[in-house]
Length: 291
Image 1: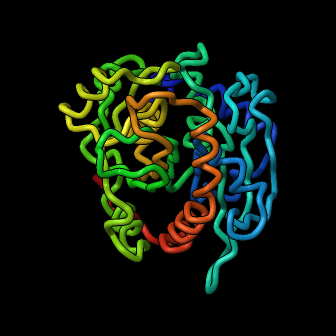
Image 2: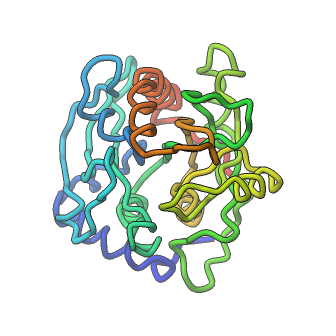
């Protein structure tokens, strides 16, 4: 199914604005990877040095505000699209775009606006997508600080960026080949469990009853983002994978966003190494398995 811009006009409008801000950038070809950064994740990937960073050679920076988009108001989220190159042995550098922070629906914006930066890059040219997020653990076996790979998602009652007859298949939202490459990077596959992401609207944390309901529906982790981005990527036909950082136990007492930020900081090195390994392993020339 070919993507129809009328399904997500906010993405098309943002694509025109982005192309105007960095004229000619996408004429050289699509980005090999786009990364959407979750709480405390996206900004360090481009700003930090050493083991906590991707090691990008930055080429362009575009503020979300310059694309006439809302600026993320949540602590731990950046406000830019950063374009850079990741050097690799035996091949041309990988072209990478990092969205350093999210615009969330719970901040008062439609999902179509929240996903507009992603929609812009998908429209202009993107080979693969990595979604990252901080999540609450529903499965009691998931400890705080664990990194998980998304196998599927539950967003039956959550937001979507699409409108109209966008009857997009969602049987392979998180690409099987990219998930296999992530598993191959883990020294012990049990240290990178595959999970089902459950969407909660937020901004309030989930009650114990809500957590129990999500668990009964097959969800292993819960978060307030990500799912609508995976749906948009599926509509564009772009292979996607997702990594989550478990920052708390869902439904526990005394939850706070400060805890999310602290746990994200602790795991930055491990997460950056995994992301860097995935980007380099997949490479620019391999074609992920279609749905």
